[in-house]
Length: 435
Image 1 (cartoon, one colour):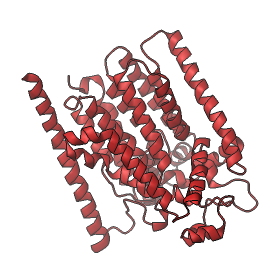
Image 2 (cartoon, helix red, strand yellow; image 1 turned 120 degrees about the horizontal axis):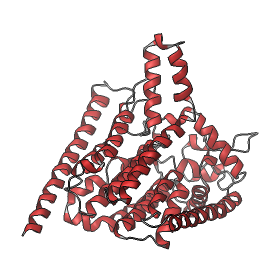
Image 3 (tube, helix red, strand yellow; image 1 turned 60 degrees about the horizontal axis):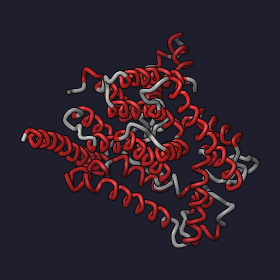
């Protein structure tokens, strides 16, 4: 009787925040549409990419830049947009050995070259391969979460929320693969005292696509002796290094001029460019940079002051991200210590890890926020919905669509998400978690 009452209370609590989430999404899209299309009060603000040619670009624009696979005649036959054929920024630059594709890690390169060859074999329309991938992704999501959906159909609003829609709109299938592998890894971590070979494989795949997920490796260190934890660390590190070394050798054969040196060079070029401060970003560095540049643009009296010169050396510096990472790494280690002494449980540690990787990665594009969709479901499936009601509510606020602005405007979405992610860390301290 008591157990039924508790379950009913939890279900009611979850329903409340799901109903709020549904109407909040509806209201935001409606207000945005009215202000943008009819009243023309929002001219520069956008939710998704404004340029139609940016749709599906993270997959399609890249694979159709491979001149060693597609001729111009083949691209025309596949109905590829003219600007992707004759002005594709991912194509080889004359006189240079590097391309923008080389900013991607080896595993992503292998996947993209394989996808390009598959698209050529299909030979129907340039969007066909993406449709196939999206169908497979939706099938996987349905299969994984169908039991949860049958219990409460409102969960569909969370599963297909803004970050997931944005991911499909951008065509970033590798982001889906890495996030879903991370989800399976975390799911097994929640329900098992030990992580086996399957979890190691999932972890390595996820991190080979998104190296910033390496912070989740702390979950392999259990409440054991220092020696056993050290040996586990060496084992995982060695397997990750060996796997990526092998994939690197394969990618060097698949993509002309791709090498470790060119990858590191292009990655450094990317980090030093303003591309890392795009508006679809939830990182702390992105938020502080945007606030700082906005203040400089609107308060010219700050120019040529000692304070401005000092902040310049910090905020503009590529090394600023290391300072941010060090701070949140200390916070993460503290939570890991609390976990070791049974002051926090596994869901709290997972939430803090997700927030850490988002806040310390520049940029952390909004479609990567799907890890919070999966974290939401991990907590729901762990049956702690009443205990983690505030955490679930804050996660849903992170998942809401937000209007993005490019500099010199103040990007409220980036600032708001940064605040919410820090709040998520804060509310998961032991004294704020209900027992």
